[in-house]
Image (cartoon, rainbow, N blue to C red; front, top):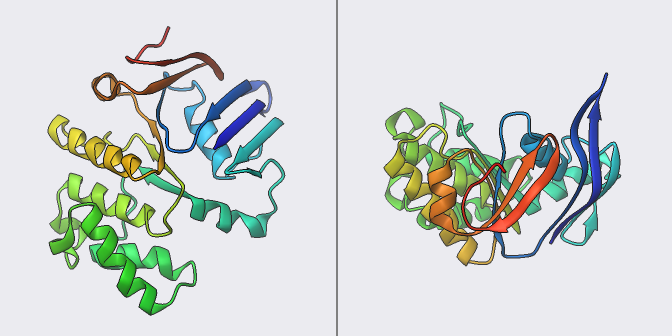
Length: 226
């Protein structure tokens, strides 16, 4: 469960990136977060992974009040929240398998666990036979699948996808959304930040619209900025 209670984030001198946001997302939901540039979407994500601290209000993730989270606790939080970005953020000199294993290595996991987990997540994202390919040998859609696999290695309760189809064509974009829906069907909460109206309308799931740092609409259905 994710809960924001009257959360505000201010930047000097007078920018209100978020302004008294109240929000509750239940375990297992798939939610699209939409809004124009500057609406507060990126700030919201940064608060959820403790890259930023709220100016006011409280944030609870999975029963854990992270409002005043201490720095040593942040890695534990981020193992609960998988992140997928528009630009993939893969290491170019590492293979698909090595990119995924690296996420386990920096967390101090054993070689044995890497050998077990990497093939499992590659299979989930449909890249079982492409473990030894480098990013330059893969399409944009395949690179994004590697990024999703990397986000799954700690079995996160929440997966946050920040414009995951922004660099992909329409067909590949739909394949990535289908994959995220499949992951959601496994029980993972999925937060999808997107500008793509077609994707949101196709999902027919909950849509949260931000404008000027506030939630102005929260409904099930089509993309809207009103």
